[in-house]
Amino acid sequence: MKSKSQLYSNQVAFLTKVLDELARKAKLKKTPELYISKHERLASVNVFQNRISVGEHLLYLWAEGKFSESDVEATLAHEIGHLMDFRRDSKSSSFRNLLAESLWIAFGILPIVLYLLSPSIQTLVLSALLAIGWGFSLPFIVRWVEVRIELAADRNAAIHLVNPQQLADALVKISSFGMPPTTLGLTAKLSFLAGTLTHPSFSDRVRFLQNL
Image (cartoon, rainbow, N blue to C red; front, top):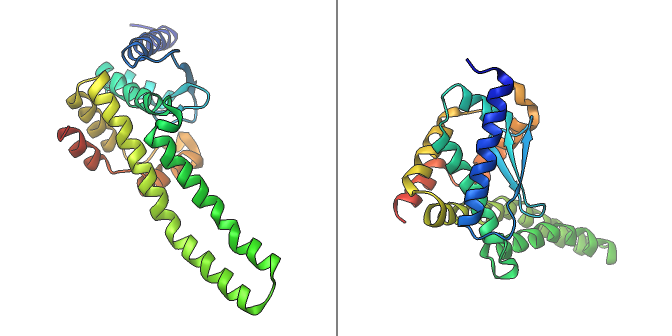
């Protein structure tokens, strides 16, 4: 039986190998850095630092047989899919969508600025109406953007990196895991809840892959 340290070393070696292979398939200039996180639920990507974080929780699920090497590869392929899109800078649809989302979020300070520049009852009413409209629209804008970013990564992964069914199978398994365990803390739970509101559902993503 392998010790925990041996198992961990083998898992990291496999992750490193798969990242190298996927980066070559994706024709990335540089393989993203691998980071093992105590707080990450499964995996995430930082496109600005060219880094993919893999959670210790994913390694635990993998060691327990609840996640296979094929599932791990598909999960990493999705994160690489994000890098494939964002590497195109301003030509990237995800980049443009994220920029639009950021500008709309920044628009939230306009009502305050408007009232400060011209304090009056009329301006106060106008500012309040703008703020209310902005607040109601924000969740829809964020979801519209995030859904497209996630589906773009799935498309890149399924077309260029792994078999669509392989990615779909991994998504079905991930959807069965539910809420993050208490060991990951409140931040992971809040992130999970936010993701369910702003990201496409797993069933939507699986249907998307089946239609490619």
